Image 1: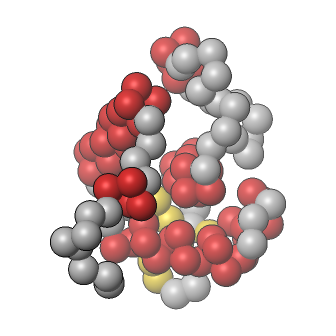
Image 2: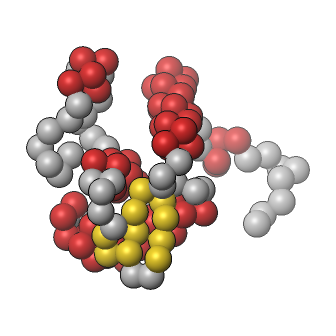
Length: 118
């Protein structure tokens, strides 16, 4: 929350510990969504969020593959498809809830002797 503010509905509907930690991907998406009237260079996003520029570039590339950001070299912006963004956020929250309820899955725990190494 680089602006120091959030929407009051988001605040009211959040769990008490929801804002404790956001991963870098969430922080980038939230930043771009909160500043959807601008396009940003990856280095500027990194600087604003206190992240490594290479990490931000890699995350932005993955987000672009998912259709959640737009890119015109060297600038990045949040998707203009708000329905897609909301759908991705709902899916993300669903996965977080499942991880909280059932614990996070670890590939090592799921591996069987019949699985091939990749």
